[in-house]
Length: 283
Image 1 (tube, rainbow, N blue to C red):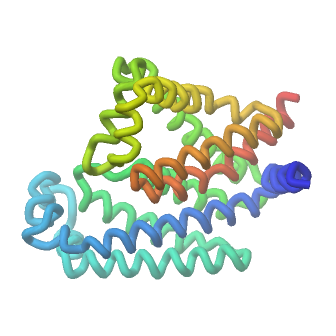
Image 2: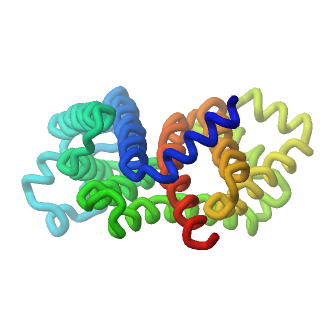
């Protein structure tokens, strides 16, 4: 019964481009809501004496040459908090409409605009899930703009899938050539940090060094082999994407990377759709 339901789900997402777009939109919108609320909960960072003070940040991007005076004002703390509130409202409306069957190009554009504002306030770097959002939102807008089943819409969905598959693969290759990942010590180092660490996991890895080696190579193997998801049959598709979900659940639970639980899996419908597309072309 489970296998039948999984097959039906894969078949629907593999042939229904409108459903693919709606599901991705709902999940990307949910990601924007969660991240905005997290930023708002730590809004003191954006104060004049905070870690992300605009007085300091603007020195790095030479705002007088890059941004107009109005934008400079908007990115200051009181107004920037308003952007976060607006971002939540935009995302909530976007998700609600998508659930009801309509994806708004305007709301996708507005949400992307708030993402651009965030990039100027987080010059130290944003997470990989934010980059997923930056890539996915414009592609979704293109997909919605063109008719269902059109070449442009199909290309936009395939673009999302290709970008995500490439991101996994590049991450895997970078680990593959790293001495720390080859020996497994990278895992111990990560879990010993204050930001991404976990005392229980770190002690377990320290006590059983072979777990570090095995865990590191499991991650390397998963990420470098991820491109097979585009060409494999339903069993391979289910296995790889299921492993991906479990991988991000682990990251969320033990490393505090909650956004990873939504961001990357949000694009999986595009991978399923592209997989079926390639099967139709190549087989």
